[in-house]
Structure formats: C-alpha cells, structure tokens
Image (tube, rainbow, N blue to C red):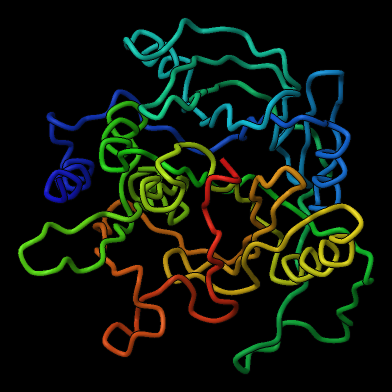
Length: 355
C-alpha cells in the first residue's frame, strides 16, 4: 500500500495515465457540521473569531474576515460532521466530476454568493461537495498583520504594536479538514482519483520485527503544479487507533492573520471557557508536520476547531515523507513528533467524542 501511495505522488508529477485524477481542485471551501443548538454554536464561533452571516431555525452560516462569503455552515440536529467542500477550477471541471458515478448532477447553491455544486459521499460516508462560481464578498482590503522586527531585520519603525485584551481573533480563511477514517490509504486513493489530492507526510511508526507497519495518519495537499499550496488541506487519522473505529470529524482548522491572533484567541476562549463550556484540547504549540502554530478548542458539543498560522507551503515536486509520529521526546527520533514546542498532545485528541 505504501508503494501505491508513493506512485500516486509520482504520477501527479509525471502525468501518468494510471493515476490521472478526474479534476484537480484548487482550494478548500467550508465544512458543514451539525449540532443540537445553533445559539450555543453561534456564541462559540463568534468567540472563536467568526461573524454571523445568517441564522434560521435550522441553519447557521458564519464567515471570517477574508473575502469568502462563509467558512462554516452548521445545521440543527444531532451532532455530526456532514461534509467537506472544495473549489473546482472551472464549470467544465464541475461538469466532468458530475458525470462520474460517485457524484450527483450539478445543482445551484442557495447560500450567499451563489454558485454551483456537485455532491458525493467518500468511503467513510462523509459528504463531499465540490463548488464553483461562489462570488467573493466585497471588502475594502484584507486585514494586514503588523510588520515584525526579528532576526536583525527592522521592518517596523515608529509604529507601536498594540492590542486590547478583548480583541476578537481575526480569521482570514478556512484552512483544512481533519478526518478520522476507517481506511486512510484508500481514502487518499479516492480523493486523489476524484479531486487530485496528493500525500505530503505519511505517519508510520516502525513495526515490530516480522510485522507490517501500520499507517497512523496521512497529511495530504492539493496538487497545484508549480504553484505552492498548504502542506495539508486534509489530514486523515486512523479511526481504529484514535476513535474506537468510528469515522467522522477529527477537527476543522482556520487560518489566522498571524501569531498574535492565535494567542488572542487562546486567551479569549480561556476567559470564557468556564461560562460557556469551551475546552482547550491542545495548544499553543508549533507542529512538525506543516509547521503551523496551533491551538485546538472543543466547542460545547465537543467538535474540535483549530486556530493556526505560519504553515508550510509546498509545490508538487516534494514527495511524501515517511515519519514516525510516536517519537516526540524520543532521542532516537529527535526530528519528529506532534509538536516542535509547546503543549504535549492531549490524550483525547481525535477521540470519538468529537466525531
């Protein structure tokens, strides 16, 4: 199976016919979750850094500070991860995908910004939406971080850096999906075949003598050719190891303006955690795989949301790396582990409570 994963990456570069995807998506779009109380979810997401676009009896739509019309949808009902969403490059790509057996006919979207969508279910039964033509909302300009003075490079002169304790963290875009999957290798194959997703890092601890290694997780990214893209747009974890064999949500991640916003979000959520039932899951720290500065919080419904910034960008020439995920603090594997600095990974990360 590992050889097959490496071949998927190789063919993405060589344009080998065996693994040519139907289309190559160009970005992630938004998650759709389900939770039992939209008022409680709205309060959490506002404190997390989002703004309410609309709320009805059965649907909550939230946005960040970037141009995306929305970055999370929540439906009212029993807690559930309904679907991922990705952006197609053209209406022609959307049509190509809709003609595949796994995908539906094209429909018009009724959400802000309009556009079109084709839908499928992945191998874990999680919905997959591929959209095209959603118009960005009109904003004067993107928020800009303060210049930094570091490493002897002076970029900020006569400009004092000041924040207020109550400032809401600024989210600039939706970042990636974390999914607990029943078969992560086959999930990568399915997403590669249909959407052109390729592996960045494969988490695989050394196997005992005479046994085959078990893949713990796969970080995967978009294939945008020579154009750099996020180290991962989707991260699969082995559900048999982390969530008692239950597939579903691991986490959803949102890119912040900069490190100040990650820490401001941490402080704000910590101050409100007792009143509203927010739980710090893991953070603040800096990942190895992807290098992001991260901070994970559980909503009152246990669904994990991540603030992250300063992640790695890769083009499609970088092959997958095989890494040992269990080596944090192990002197035999000093270069690997869940985080480079910061809090140790929580014992509940990815468990079935959040699925």
